Image 1 (cartoon, rainbow, N blue to C red):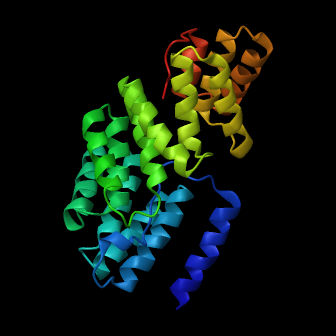
Image 2 (image 1 turned 30 degrees about the vertical axis):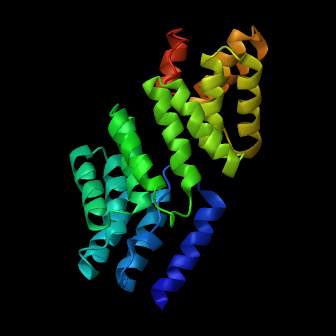
Length: 261
């Protein structure tokens, strides 16, 4: 029971002070099925909370405990994949994502997170296949996240038509989904629909603090609109808040055509 109290306290602290990762992770996955070992579940939930706080060593310790309680608990392998990705242990991360899906083939969060991992590595077709697998499961509690990620992956691949299809499906469910709004702004920019791009980005800014990719979008949109003051404002925020981001390097080198996603 003490562990349950710790989870509750950590959850409150995370909600109060931590930004939401774009890659959702859930230790409570109804599609995993079976009789869940409560120790494995609780330690995986703790690992997820430490992950959001970037306390990766502590998260790894919780996951070792979780797998000691149940070596076949798919969400623990999913969380291992996320932590190892942040630690740049990419081969190990991929192996653990695959293990999560092997243990629970209908595990939507596992498919979503593995899809994100693959798309970030330029393996777009593989990633989109996993997003589609996530969306096939009627028990998936947050399909809008996989849809939004699939839209972003399609954008990175250069398939604007497919990205638009995913975005339409997202906005039918969640009109203010942040990942989808950013993808929509990029889509409109690439199509030359500059006012629509600005509108999508401003809608995103109303609901969340803009990250480096979104600020870079702002620079590029306002540059196309010849709004020098707004362009300079977005650029200044990007340099100040994200000095080491790839988008900042593009800005400093005057390369305005790259999305830097």
